[in-house]
Image (cartoon, rainbow, N blue to C red; front, side):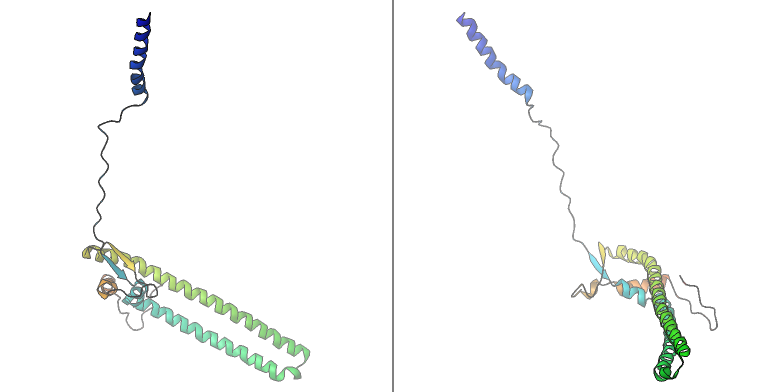
Length: 204
């Protein structure tokens, strides 16, 4: 009897490791190796003053020159409207006390109307100027991006950053490609000289 009990205990002891192995699998010896780290070479970066390029390329000079003419024309109209308003105000100041109630009320109504019209004129003109400036900037900027990409590939650049004079204290001049972009843009999009008396071209 004792021999049988001893055999039973030994059998239980030998079975425990087997049960344990069945519950916790052994780590595989064929696990995939970790991926090799990606090696990134040194970046080659250049800088571009996009606003300067847009404003000073030949097409930009033409477009913003036309915008400047529009601004000057609207300034002349505004000055004329201000003079009319000043004349009415001066008339009211000098002759107001001598006018009849009806005449004075009519003069004040004219002044109020011209002040309202002048304010609306200023607001509408500023909106139109801003819209034209944005339209021209986007129009040229979209055509300039392929030029920047072409120069970047030719130079083997990793990136071209926008140059912001208020954001960078100093940039090595040899890293600035603004002049190259302007030159390449002028060659790709030459501006034809309009003959005298020609009809102005349509807005972009």
